[in-house]
Length: 155
Image 1 (tube, rainbow, N blue to C red):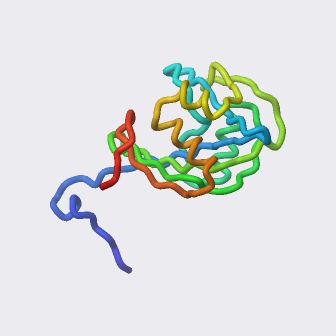
Image 2 (image 1 turned 30 degrees about the vertical axis):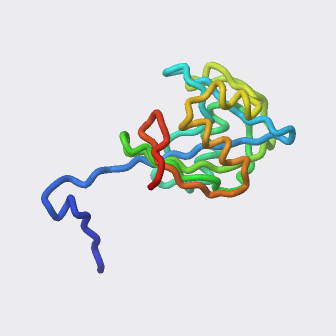
């Protein structure tokens, strides 16, 4: 059995933990994108949340989108991996297409809307808008890091 020990663990430091979340970049036939206004902080984001321990990522994104928006989705493909270097959160974003349901708010959302790409850029912080815009460009999957507010450019 081969065990891997991180440099920090070998030096007696605790190993940093990461959280994994999933989010749905839900694209309608007319090109509009599903977005929620979060109940906890009022920001506009794509629907998503923490992946449960035994849950496959594709099932997690279907569950999260349904819970937060009332929209059923079919998962198309992974379009990006985004790491918040400040909080240790790795987010997997999947492009999805709507497959039923009706828009509704939840305990986690105070508004559910279908936005144009221009509206996404206006309403969302850069680190969330890029996830939806990346899902549209067909060049993914993208891998990006950010500090919670701004993208970190790679050297």
